Length: 452
Ligand SMILES: [Zn+2]
Image 1 (cartoon, helix red, strand yellow):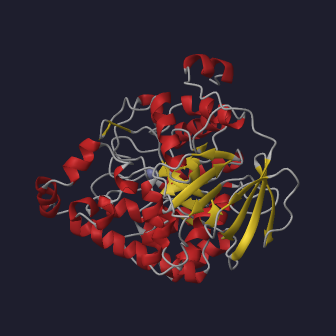
Image 2 (tube, helix red, strand yellow):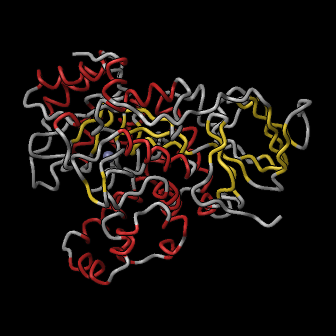
Image 3 (cartoon, protein in one colour):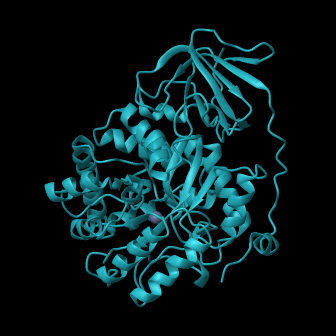
């Protein structure tokens, strides 16, 4: 049964942020390097003019500034579009652990604010959502609530006693037994105005039943009937091929068991199927036990609870991970993800950007998006290519390219200002000086204060 928004609002009292009305004022960011998200060479020493929540103009030099505009001289900083994460999750973790009771409005908002404060201005919560997310989405659209702009895959469709193996409340995921039941589940999500449909197709390396082709075929058909696209969690090449042949629109992780083959590449190109590599998923199983240098950065530490930081820095944790027989498989997955990303990118398959952050304590909203960019570059993309995947491409993947994803006149003012140039070193996306989201200024979680 369809629940009206009025009822949802009553059921889910939200801590309203009481956002001030959008200022109609004009702000000019001067002396900035503009990476506009289109992939074009950056414009050096430019001026970006923002009016209210929109970008008014981008010009080389100090020109075109309307009278009365507030001028922010940024002395050579870099401006790029706000990051868009097309595979994240919300409120699945509480007190450093996955929990079936974590999905509250307060926890959802806290994570949306965390994403936003790391320059992730838009995110798609790709399944395992409770209905209260619609009230939050609605209030954001009315300009009443802050946090990363959220899109939702509603509950999503998993398999009984199998994927996804996350603790979840009964109203957080569907696990249909038949194709007919699956069609009803899709219809219910369409009635609530989901943005996309999520399915999980994974046998866990043969340890559990994968969703049957009969069920996912029915889901894809029913979703398309409602003009909804379908994103699939996958791991294996054979499942990816079958899903693409059946009309799936997005592979929400890369194929990681085998190198992608010409058949899959040709089918993905022909059907314009998106690939979202999620390196931070594979890495999340082992990387913190290796104590990489980034763990010393405030940019990392401020995104993680002190309890987890202490645990991950302990010798006991390192020993536990190093003795886990599954780790070799996760490292192999990471390597195959990289190889397949480079192959698919070079072949011209559309590539998006995602992290699966929020799905587990080791996948960190805000931080993981910056790490994912680094991993994409490590896999062979240029910094510019990785940035375009996370901005323009993801706006197209989400169907919001008319308003977001690039710095162009008329688009929403979703901007991240960086002290250092990410084209020189992709980890410079962490040098956040300022964030604008829908024209609002947002305090960076870990602001970089440059000497001026
Ligand atoms: Zn996920």
